[in-house]
Length: 210
Length: 210
DNA sequence: CTGTCGAGACGTACAGCGTACGTACGGGAG
DNA sequence: CTCCCGTACGTACGCTGTACGTCTCGACAG
Image (cartoon, each protein chain N blue to C red):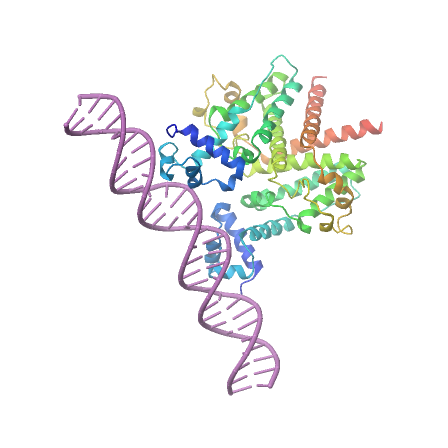
């Protein structure tokens, strides 16, 4: 057994989150997982919050942000958004941890930097680039949260709607659309909205340069 | 002092969340707030989770979803999205609680029903209406989370970027756009994206009926 | 008036949490 | 050898949600 270190603690935390969910994470649980005393963890991590920051950072660093500066900006934006969505695939149950922590580190700022530079190179103004960036972020994060099941009320996923639950008198549309509401191809839905937004932004760019 | 009842407990919980944040909510704390024994709460609420559901439902019920079926669908969609955003104004610190709970009740499904019927009346197909609905939901929830500060990493808000934090070598765009990234008129940003998306959807509708 | 009964308020108790603090050990520096 | 420091660890405190048992009090039957 190698000596305890920060990396092993973070890995154990991620593993535990993916196996049993974020609620199962406790310092005691992680220590048990590593067959180590609880307080030994504190030699490598100042506190639980910092550990979750490290988890977030580690996951973020794994995302493959391949970017081709020569490609048209529409494709680049699409690729960056899709890369971000990888998180929901590779670490579904950690997704909420990642998006809800403020990272001042490079891992957190790199995607921001890349997105902003893409938009600036596409020809958008300073304020405009930031606004568009924010719209994309909102959409991407909202989509991720639906995909990992954090916002179930307003984004009913598979099995969430049981016909017995809906009174067709009160909720005719929900009843009628139940088949479509219950099934959700996350990738297709994500791309649908992504293309829609890129289309809208491209429209504005074209309109202005005309 | 009126007798303890479910309504008073929920009201106290909301009050506590808004005053001290969702983390401050504990059964003991709420009981203390009501000058009552902890276990007395359990005569009116089965457990903490159900209490938070009730909180979510209560807040959702307060939202004023005024809808004019005669208005053009673009305006109706805009109004519904804005109504939802009210939550971030009226109960900022409870917002995360509301969006993260699955509500099978009428309060949770009414906004869904209304949005879907608006889209159907606008002329969208069944599957299409659901897809568009999901895009809006993702955007609205993502925006709310930024506004209430739950996703700070990718949506830096006021004061989050200190010039000392960013190395202009590594992050030139973030450095250059720092003024715009630090300031955020949430209402304006929300409307910007909302109009953008409505525009894009209207474009698709026009294109198809042409 | 008295006996009974049910509902609500409450105290106690337990397992689990984050972590502050004190201690023990093992290897490198002087 | 001695000293020292980083690491591992046990204990302890105050907090959490809540299961369980008890007590009190108002309503109603006889």
